[in-house]
Length: 625
Image 1 (cartoon, one colour):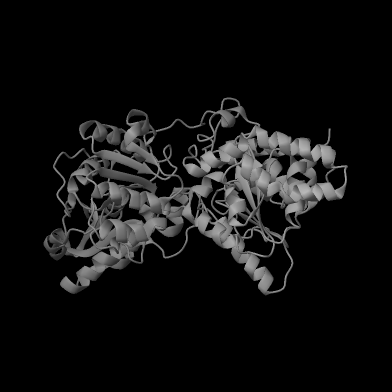
Image 2 (image 1 turned 180 degrees about the horizontal axis):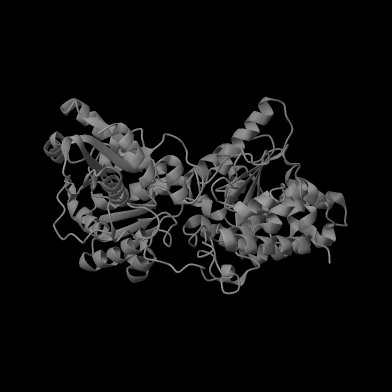
């Protein structure tokens, strides 16, 4: 039996595969993806659902001359296979290996770096303008999921694409899901199209009865197509905007996708090709639990169970505390942007469905919506990943902080997150949040402090963010039951100090755990008994503690999982230079660069954020003692 996937080693090789073998090739691709992702982890359900769609695109296009702009890019694994990157799957999402998203530096077939949703139409439109202004002739295709159409940027792109008098293809990959199940009016609109049997039946009957008849009759039917759609599908959003609509197309049929693309290439305006796919297709656990297999850790293929037992994470703690807060105060409400599972709010939704709001992939709307609820007397908690919250900077500044409204931002995945790479590392939030007046930024050192900070934040009555890392909780250091005081740090342990060798480790959030390990290394290597202070409040930080402790310490070391520019250390150093000008300061932070994908321990070592690297830098700073 032929192994058709082995015949695809370079871009365009799929065109050498006989048409009769497309279903077999699709099956081989699915099996390959299941086997590889079960080892490395990665985005599975979305990729299994777009195998035939991607094959159809590659058959109809000439890459890399033609351009495919993927939205988010978590569905691009088949695209990578078809462009000669099969060997890269052994190092998928590992440090130095193949990225889990399209990357221009990885292949000339990757037209645009992506990782966040709703960007593809705008980027594709930019390519179209660049093509036309330079007199080039290539085809531009933006592939956007129906979930990404809940994001406002997608509509801004559609609004401008409607003005085109040149070809631009928008493939709408409709699987009724983003990560969580889709919500809102667009989802309902597409559902009506998917289930409109009257339209689909009539379309098929007209086509098959007239395809061999007079061309004049077919042309008359074509001219009346919009009227038929308007009657049978009220609204016809895309056609009414001035964008040609083709579909719905069976996205699990390679030949159907290819034919639709060939037709779309001849339309001299923006055209939406609406394809219906099924997330997780071909692997029953992913079909039944597409959210669970959206982004998965390594798993057992037979059962679909994770290979490693799950430990309690910061997200789990947040989930539990939110339920308790909901029980205690009926004014507590929760907001998420299509991430009910990822942020831990699914349980809150199950218990308090009328106080839970999933707004779709629309972080800007989520923040202003929360501001409105706060102005109306509620206590909104916006749960969002750090990397996605940066999309709503303007709304945080103008709609929340300018009015000093009591919105609580629970910022998950703060700091280094690992395998998803540059687009997902949460290393900017201290910088962009601390730049906004009226905003308070906090970070817990362990699981108990996260619980206490959430309770504090809901009583605080002003804008406040709690940033916490991805993964299992730190349960070191004893539970402290002293009430949290605004802007005050916590003395974890007081060293011997001294102006000759005294070291004060001033650490934020997850770096407190690292500080404990650094202190042990300093004791072992040089007998230095360092002081550790848990900042707890990254902004504003505890200046009274610094006034008290700095005279007893030669070196102040700030520690954070955030970039240097605008971060905790920069703020502290600026204050110290003004009030304690002779004080030595060493800032430990993520360098001002975009951090690639890889396991977090490896990334910390490469960036100098591991205990050994930090201890070495401290000893170099102190010199001969």
